[in-house]
Length: 479
Image (cartoon, rainbow, N blue to C red):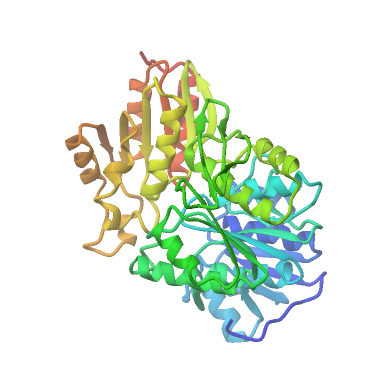
């Protein structure tokens, strides 16, 4: 923290700089529920969060210029997308207006008097957080939560709640330009679910060792009477657990885990598995979410829930009722026998697990993966050699040119064309596309009844899903 912490009273004006970010818009909603007057700016008002803000009655000022900060707000919250040379941020700091990062504000306003349950890890944070909220709700409790996605059952990724519990999706990305510590270090963890740990965020972490150091720091914050629930299938997770001061409960596929996945099966509408607790059969668990990775996410929530003393049947009912999260293997429609799925996966590990899960759900159908590299990490060459293996479950792969490749350093840029070549060398049908328009034309011309198409991107993919659905709905020819 870079200054003395200041908390204005309800009714005061709080201004959010970068308000259209997913987390920032959610924070705006939480603060509004708490009684604050909310204002904010962004470089552009873009959906879906611009729609969320509009529906809450929060206007967005076109940014960024110091004039937006008149009259002077009581507090400014600066999102981590904001750079040090941002005109509004420079004005805030130079004129002495009180300011906080997103993570500091979330902690100060919502976690100080709650028991914070933080879901962290390279993969599965959003879905696991949603499963955890669903389990707690089934106990007739009203947990608060801040989730980096939109759970289908809740309508938004944020809620103040009234129970002692507050579920937070814990991100290891840096906090702000003025605070380079990981965001999750601000979240006062009482309990942590650690889903996975491998190298990511190549723009801020030089190697896996640096990533592990961030998680060591998170684990060290859990109090002795707290709990760490960790997926021991990951070697780096096991290393991090060795530093915990609190109780550690492990889960995973391996027989040495406290909670072992056991037998599982995947259908089109559900996944069921039979966990073992310390080697003994525990019972049957059913969820609506496909894939082994979602069974493991559920097992982590189950391990935490049982250790916290939740009522077993209610917990199972809550897990079974969880509808998942938008853009996480989200079924978007079936037109003329063609199934369309939208997914947020972009890290090669997540791409692999998503496609493996969909192959299990649709074993006899052609699986077509459309991939858009656009994150700060997959613009870089760090995973160039790994990505071809991530698509092993797909029958055909369509790869878009990297979005804004100039944001990666020269000499360290991912090549979509090389990915396609490597896939072809491995025997996979793969094609390169310079833009979304050419990819869309190829899809509309080449799709057949029975195909399953999954779009993989952490962005909007140039509206590919919506345009594909529209094209198929209007009878574009396919065989």
